[in-house]
Image 1 (cartoon, each protein chain N blue to C red):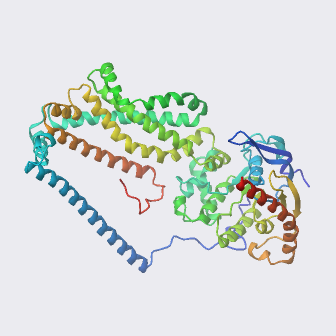
Image 2 (image 1 turned 60 degrees about the horizontal axis):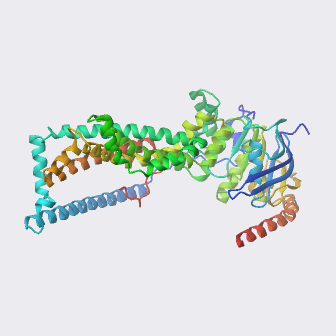
Image 3 (image 1 turned 30 degrees about the vertical axis):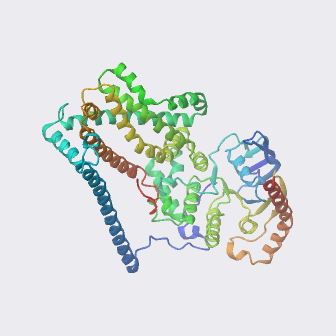
Length: 269
Length: 305
């Protein structure tokens, strides 16, 4: 394997809680993502999946250990990063066109040129004709497309996705998953896709990294040797899919139970 | 990421090409529904206007009647017909202080000046303190203390500092307007969605861009909401300022009327102020609609008041 695109070595992340305590989100996490690889990170609620992305993106810095992106340690937000958020993060006061053009404009591309590139990307995510709409005039799926175009227009070499489709209905979701795979296939980006949905993880990824219940650390890594191109809705029927699913689920189940017991305990206290 | 942009668009779409998304055209049934809906809305508007007129008629009518029948003494409570008459003389013959329009213009000049300066300062400091935590923490007890003072009394201070000039009244309006706008702008900056900030930073926005393109637009709905209240306060400031000493203005006019036991004159002055405030409110609403046209249109259940 060539030198990894993303490398986390013994990474620990602690947060100060409002009541003066310390919350450890990640403990001694080590994982890497190869260039061009689609890596899914799954784990129970509150296991630090989103924190992992925040560390790679440079939005948060590790408390201990080392995070490297393309060989150099992360000290802030790098230009090579794209981030698709779980909740809507498109700017409500900008039109679709202005939203998508924001990235290039922030990088100093002149307005007209940025808008031209934005039009191209809007067409690629299937929103041609909606350039002048405001986000509130679009459906949830369409807003996700805007978010996707907004990230991809910067041509990130690393694409981080934090449960991007969890708020969508099932049909829209599998449509978007297929489109994501098609868009990704036309790039050479490495993807880290965080999800709590194991099916989604297997259907999309080359490799699934399983985290333990919080504080999260890697419990296991599973290669997904399903052929590409994939059709997300249909690949679930393949016997190999079921095998992989079973292998991961047998381990994920324990973590989910731990996490659930903890939540029950926390609620009881 | 190096996008192979030479690929024809269709091949980028993948195995499940998304259906062409087009704006849906209204079909005949929809069109009919729309017509019915707008007709119902018009009827409702007419009913509301009718009831408003009825309300005013009952209110003014009972006032007029009870004074005519001498149930209450018009000397103390005034009389609608007397108010109208006073307004008419003010318009046709001018007031004791000069023509009515001049009094209105003087007061509005003070109020508008106070409003503009007060809001500008409020917005500026609200955003500044909202963005710089240290500054906010250092200044917060002073701001709270200043806010707790009944600031209209500063009017007397300004009357000494600025004399009978325009600036004294405008200054009173400024201190009233400033705090309302300041707190809203500050809160608006604090309430900006963390996700939007993270997104903008990832997309490459520097601090200046973050402020102008994310923080300010986001805080704008808060700021504009405060402008509605603060124009009313600017008028209060101008009028109170005039009470502490002035040679012209609606506040002075009302003050004079009060001192000559002219209750109708007091009411007439208040009426003129109310009309001016309503006009200003309409202008601010128009500005608001223009500045935040991106916001979803008002929910039908909400009543503009």
